[in-house]
Image (cartoon, rainbow, N blue to C red; front, top):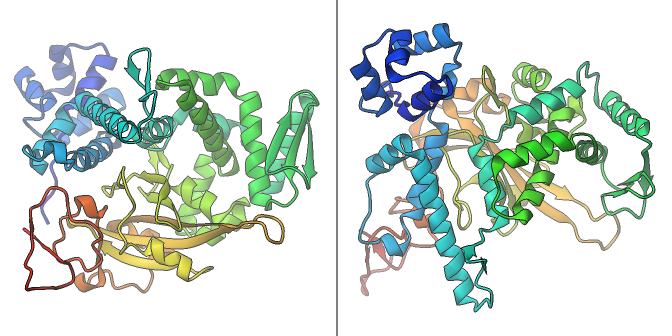
Amino acid sequence: MAVQKLYAGAKLRDLRRKLSLTQKEFAARLGVSLPYLNQIENNNRPVSSSILLALAQEFGFDITELSSGESERLVSDLREVLVDPIFSEAQPSLGDLRLVAFNAPAFSRAFLDLHRAYKNTQERMMSFDEALGWQDGHMQPNPWEEVRDFFHYCDNYLDAVDKAAERFAHGWQGPNWLRGNVEKALAGLGIRVELSDQTPLRHYDKTQNRLSLSAHASPPTQIFQLCLQFALITEEPLLEATLDLARFQTPQARDIAKIGLANYFAGAVMMPYRIFLQAAQDERHDLERLARHFGASLEQVAHRLSTLQRPGAKGIPFFFVLVDQAGNITKRHSATRLQFARFGGACPLWNVHRAFETPGRFLRQLAETPDGARYISLAHDVSKTGGAFGAPAHRYAIALGCEVKHAATMVYADGMDLDTPHAYEPIGVSCRVCDRRACHQRALPPLDKELSIDHDLRENLPYSIQ
């Protein structure tokens, strides 16, 4: 198997600038010539093992930070955007996209922002929106997408928030201990916590200094909502500082992101980073065991596993999604090469869609994407009752997975035939960007391929892909 070369010029250049070093000074510290460093920073040469060693010894740099996670996300997003019909005359190769994403990440993000603004304008014009999304001469981005992209490009890990939660949970002794400590801290602020049959899920009455939690909610949900409100009350400076750094373009995006940060804090308090990482490794990522140990739900555990990307103490790079019954992805994150579609639903061959058919069971799947990467994927349904007879229930499915090279760390891989190529189901990202020509579940033709229609021939599809 060929070893993949590491091109990380942009990250090395950013590191040098953070250290306020010239190229000449940086090259001397690394023990290489100035022209050689210049070639590396411009991605004309890969980063060698000797430079990786020098970075670790000379600067104490975590070399795992040079991994191409963000660049691969940019490549995936650029590829999906460029199948838009407006780019039909210019289709860059995958190599060109990687070159742009690795060498000019800021330009890549600006290009994605531009296309998003174009799509928003196009959709609003088609619906005859009176305002056309413009305020003071500027296009306003979709706040939900803006927040989703913020977490996406932070690798779903927020160091300051995560460590603040870990400090509060220092000495963690279980979910009951945590709940008692949070309630005690709130009582010290004069805030009373109570359970109520009338509260939808959580309600904080500032005038009465009363925090009400739904008596119908499950214990994990109650603890999560308690910790979330605790973050909003006691961690205001930290949350606001993080929001300032994010530079959201709309007040709505900032407000949504604040809830997202509080959610992140709540999950990190319930499952403190180092304790949870060790438990995940010891239990071989058994979601049910972890859920019992930390008093959390399966969804909370799966989502937390996808955030274990702390520099110097990283967990397995997982992907995590939450999908509704219509196939819409409502939560998504991937620390793997597998990136999810920004527009439309997920691949119908993916086992997450079958989870609704087998409630209460874990579904395992070995899958291969068009780029040849192989994954083990775990899917499970999530049902949330309305709390009363006749109340509508909310049904979702979660999917958690990683590349097969990490399969030995997952209990769910036991007994699976990982070495047989035919054991892997061919899946894609979404039909609009999938290269597979003979897929029997294709819903839409790929936007970047020519179609051929034969009136006298009918196979799985009414067309063939050139």
